[in-house]
Amino acid sequence: MVGGGGLLQLPALLLVLPHTPVVALLGTNKLAAVAGTGSAAATYSRRVDMHAPTAVRMAVAAFLGSGLGAFLATVVGSQVLRPAVLLALAAVWLYTLRRPGLGETEALRLTPRRQAGVAVAGGALIGLYDGFIGPGTGTFLVFLLVGAVGLSFLHASATAKSVNTMTNLAALLLFGITGHVLWKLGVAMAVCNVVGAQLGARLAIRRGSAWVRRVFVVVVAALIVRLALDVLT
Image 1 (cartoon, helix red, strand yellow):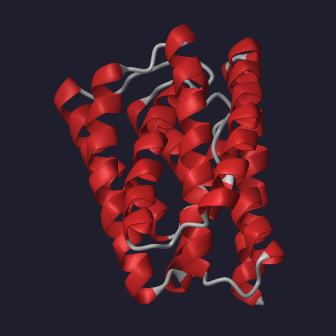
Image 2: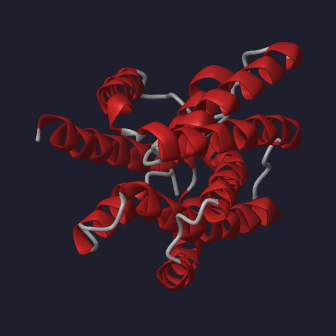
């Protein structure tokens, strides 16, 4: 619906497989995530305008950024960025709460050239984050498309899914090549992820942007709590 699936998947993997290298769990999570986001993107594309030029530019930049982020994760680990991500999510949450009408209707506020610039720069940075850490990527993409570009929450969620599919794919390729994927577990998770993604996408389409906005606020709050626990413990 609005991203944040890694909030559930990655902690679950860490809980069930505490002695497995974290980078292998990141790779396994990406295998499941690429199936889910790809499935949701396909469903959205048939029913919702995904703003193809913006989606393509963001997806290409995010794909490259995610590959670099995944490489960095295999070299230096990803714990160092958690405090910064926590602060960013808190800012996103407060900004959304302070603007009750944000994203309920579409109000494009950038020239085509500036929109392209935001798509490329934002896609690259969020893609880098996705490959490096992961949880909350879809949420950051949605917020960028709503807050900076002016899409409605429903259209932003649809566009974000296509971009997030590419970030997951880039990271998966890197993790797979370097041998950091538990393939059997990842395939089983991918099947379940597709089922959940279909339910979420269809529910978002049926309920509309106002409802997606409410879900977004709840998911961001949950991400903040989860990351705060990680940082403090």
